[in-house]
Length: 301
Image 1 (tube, helix red, strand yellow):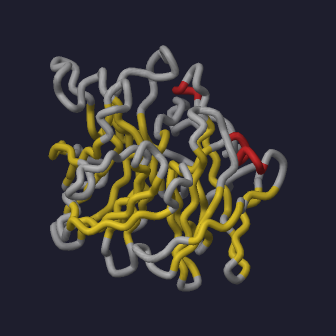
Image 2: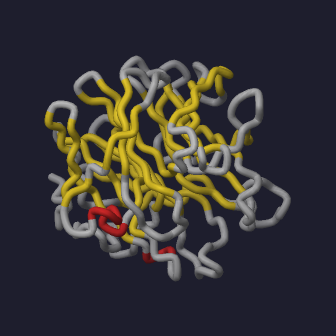
C-alpha cells in the first residue's frame, strides 16, 4: 500500500472511504468513509452515503458496501443526494451493544452545519439514521468533526465551530446518540479543522489542519492532561519532504496496529474526488515530543 496514492479493494476497485475511521472488532478491522464514486462538479459530488471495508490484516480490504445510504427520492430529506455528508466516525457502545456513527451533515452552502447520528447492530451495518443535532444549548455550528473514545468508554465529540475559528469538545451521553450538554472550547481563534486524537504517556494529543479548503497546509498538534482540559498548541509534528504541507494530505483519523499508532491522511483531488488517495503514517513519541515521518508504504501484516 503505497502512501499518497489511491488504494484498491480485493476486487481491484478503488477504495471509497474518504474522511474515514478504522475500528477493530475482535480480529477484524472495519474502515468507514465517504463514498465519492461519482463525477466531481464544482469540487463536490452528490452525497452517495458511507462505505465500509473489512480486513483481517489491514492490507486486503473487502468491500462491505454502502452502510448508510443517501435518500434519492426526497430532496428535502437530510440524507438526500443534494446534501453533504462527511467524516463518518463509528464507536461501539458496550451498554447498548450498538455501533454508533456520527458525521458532519451539511447543505451545499455549508450553512446547515449539523451532526448526523446513525446506529447499527453489526459493524457492517446497515446503519439506521436517527436524525441530526447541533452541539450545546447554544446550537453552535459543527463542521469537521471526530469522535474520541477514552479508556473508560466515555466518548467525546470534537468539532470545528464558530465558522472553524474554534474547536468544540462535548461529551456524548451514555447511549452515544446525544450529548450531555457540557462543552469545552479549545484553540480559540486558531482556525483548525480535521481534528484527531491520541492518548499516550498519560497525555492527550490532538492533531489537525488549518483551514485552506481543499489545498494542503501544515499539520499542527496540541496536548492536554484531560480531554476537556486546557489544550496547548505546540508545533508541526511532520518530518520529511513537504512536511509543511502535511505531505499534501489532511488528517482523517488515528488507529493502533501491532502496538504502533498511525495517523490517516486523505490526499484530496478536488478535480476528481473519487481518485483521492490515502496515507497511513506512524506516530512516534519521544517523551512528550511527537514525530510523524513520511514513509513510502504502509505494510500491514
